[in-house]
Image (cartoon, rainbow, N blue to C red):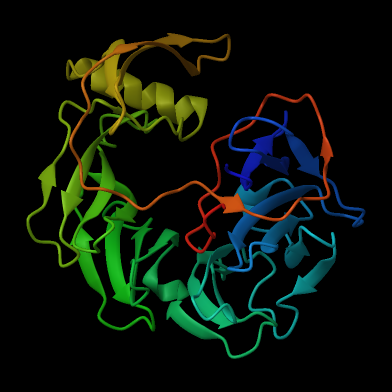
Length: 339
């Protein structure tokens, strides 16, 4: 019998107003964590320690995180005792420094701070000491960090010219390798196969899709070789709705002039048995709105990826609610299996 908890993010009406939720794998005992900490408007869960009792939380003081001026804090929360302890207070490298992963020794953490307007990758002790750069501001705006299964390498994308590109480095930042980069292709969100031999990532044709609605899935070796498409026709739903209404409308006109605008896109979800068809309409502000209908389909073959479900074994202290607006389970690579 499974006795663990799934940790997930629940977003309210505001873009960055997030709560930490927990639920049993069978859907029972849904609850949310609330903390009496002044000034913190949003909370998210990150890595869970191997003891199954503690997890790292990230809180922010300002919901406008996209402006890169928010002040954030890191905490260790004990699900058994309900104790909340702030960490990473020594020599803070930045005001905003979300966590990315807990290293296997459970004493160091990978963080993603914004320094001089650029998101960087760093490792440090849990108290904030002994900081080491993996990427620096001059290396570009870097995020979506994915550790390799053996924890010797990191994959991420860099949001810089000529377009978003996928990079792999060693854990100390050495051995930097560009896996995929092209002016007309936005490569996004790399993930490792379970054996560390492949990377899977999205490929959006951003010059003709400035909203970043559609993409294909690609795989490549970590050295950039053997890159190939898993899907075709930009059939995967990226769904970012990027840019302002004015810039999106201008680019839509350019795409339409080239005969590249589409209104009924087929979206295939990898490793599922569902095909979804998305249709674009416009709201009163001229912004694109997507409606999706689904139908059964055969499974798409892609390399096996690491599990993204988060399980903890201790009983949390949050109260149960009847809320249903919750997102997918948060990724945590160090979560223990449930008993």
